[in-house]
Length: 506
Ligand SMILES: Nc1nc2c(c(=O)[nH]1)N[C@H]1C(S)=C(S)[C@@H](COP(=O)(O)O)O[C@H]1N2
Ligand SMILES: [Mo]
Image (cartoon, rainbow, N blue to C red):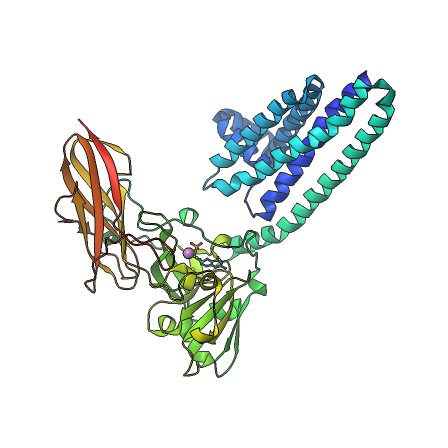
């Protein structure tokens, strides 16, 4: 009897550990910063009263985190055993334990700074592993109990399944560690990196209008939108990195990371935008980039007269074709090494990515850049162009209402509204807003340092109690008025006026 109880408990522990292994491996494969167990440990820290945490730190010193993770693992292990024992009364009882554990993991992961839907994937994989394996393990145990004459055969089946699952879990966990170790090494290289000439700058005061709740003019790195096709992003050591400049050039050039940093560094504010950004969307962000001008490198290589574009290739195989003119006409098109005064975050292209003011990211902003091939548009078809997106991608003039949010309840009376507008490299000259289909009113527009960034805008209205509709449009410095014609993001960027509905309460 005792022996069989132990087997039931073991069924839970083996399935549980296997699920932790697959979820850990998923987290490392997807380059998610923390595995769910670590996320839970951090949640425990956050939920523990301060004095207790301090006492624990004093008692344990440096060992506090490992001890906490070990404690979480122990507690979780006991719950695994409990799930196993509960399964004696039917698998649905143990399912409750698995679901609760997954829920805790999910909450912990989502509480992490900057967590998105992808971050819960490891928890989902872990839960699926728990459910599938536990039922596979419980099956022989239940059979053995129902048919005592088969008990010894079912026991062997159980041990075989458990042994195989256990070994597989260890292998998956080790593989995850191995995959993750390269990334961890690059992360520590990045942390230790000090790039001479990279400065940290506050946004100029003239760039902000001071409306509470609108997007900060400078987007912090951890809030900057992320778009890439790579599931597992490249982890490149700066010492291993180089870019090859070849194709229609007089001399091929190979530039290492040190070669690049030895050149004159350019720093400028540039707003990046994704062509997939819908009207009113948030696939847009503004940062201060530090890097080396592409034009300088191209001049050194000597571009041949027939060339009209540069095919940029990423370490992950993604590519795009950028008009040569945008790289050489004097704008701050650069191979960037730093973002907002810090070495590029790994997800944003560490160690080197391209930034070209005025062009959507899909034709210009190559992350993990490794190759610049000078060529002609009639000889290349890049990743997104092959998939039906346009060949060229100048950013369309756009504007967005940040305050009030769509569906917001606001107090009736004086209402301060605001948002952002952009037409990179051309500049925004004015922004107009219309309330409830009324006249277009000129908004206050901030004065950013260059035309390569978005601008903040603000306006004030008197709003009566009831439902309202607010609309925004912008005009560029060359006089182009943002069109109200509604077009989808495909193939070259959405158009239309951002419209927000809100309610004023008396
Ligand atoms: N290697 C690589 N670089 C890439 C992409 C990609 O999928 N792979 N996406 C591009 C697109 S579509 C955009 S909008 C920008 C986004 O840059 P961000 O993730 O740093 O905001 O990166 C560009 N560079
Ligand atoms: Mo994009």
